[in-house]
Length: 206
Ligand code: GAR
Image 1 (spheres, rainbow, N blue to C red):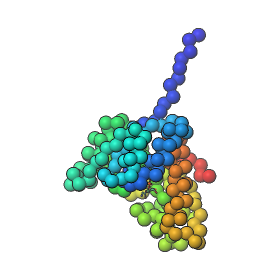
Image 2: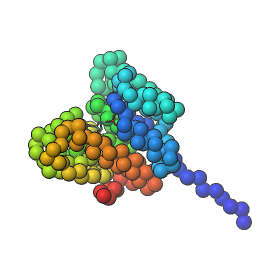
Image 3: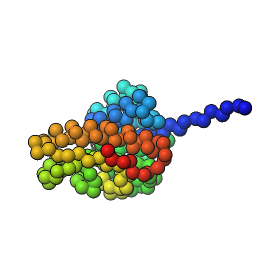
Image 4: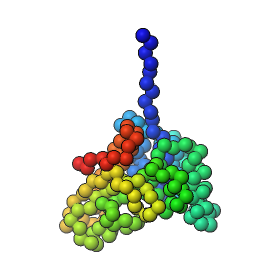
């Protein structure tokens, strides 16, 4: 009997970044090592000096800079962003330190396909200073969250969380280092779960 080859589905991922791109790097490395059935098809940045750009270029991934200065409103930015994204037909959009609020129409267009990583156990400490805020609040445990994106900031159904204990000696820098380590494991794991199952079920916390 003739064998029919079943082709493994590779998830096409667009990664949006504004800065360092260490989470982007973790995703690129996981793809390169075959740890996840995914491929980064484009990196979109809102900042022309983001370090994420050179990480993408080194991996041979196209980079698109969508310049906020060219767009008078969030809605306009969302339109340009959607057009840039659509060219690459991603199955999934992973926000990796993309420090810009997406327009409602962009979120609606890609509903259920946008995920974000955040350095806190949401709903605690949303926003741009999650690590500083957790330290200031004196919590004993913080952590990282990956969630589907809705129209609010750092908000939407949680896919996975990983708690990280806060040490009494922690500074923003030392805590962020441990949070980043957790993020770099968790984000590829979640992407792999989505690639494997297409599901939005929670990834079990370790
Ligand atoms: C990450 O820690 C991510 O969780 C955070 O930005 C950092 C980007 O680092 N995102 C947010 O705070 C979203 N509100 P990276 O550019 O090195 O991946």
